[in-house]
Image 1 (cartoon, rainbow, N blue to C red):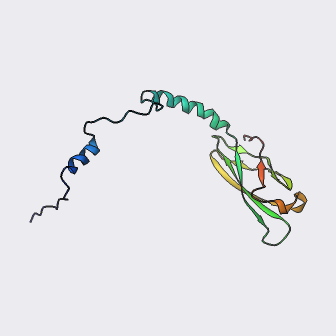
Image 2: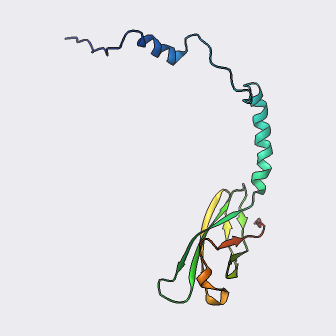
Length: 153
């Protein structure tokens, strides 16, 4: 036996409004803002912007952010500093050294095989000893890392 499906009840006049919203029924949309590009200008400028950005991405310098400064869990006299290195460029980046700097000292870290793939991040931690500077002043707020220019493999 055949049964009719229940039909949702809509207030009068709204059914037509829903159709107009879905397919657009006459009327005009407001003009674009004066500073908005027209549709004819967008395709011409898009490749130019992309081409201009490509060399900048290839030459983008790596960045680094200190993410943690903690004392030793074993109670020995050192601090552990963790940092995230990011390579925004389109080529791999080899970092041979970096310098941890804070208000009470500096520590230069030499690296043998630390490479960051294009568009990736890597995390590193380093122990900082009293010989490197005043550990009482080594905090997230006082610490930053100086990076040399990226080496290419």
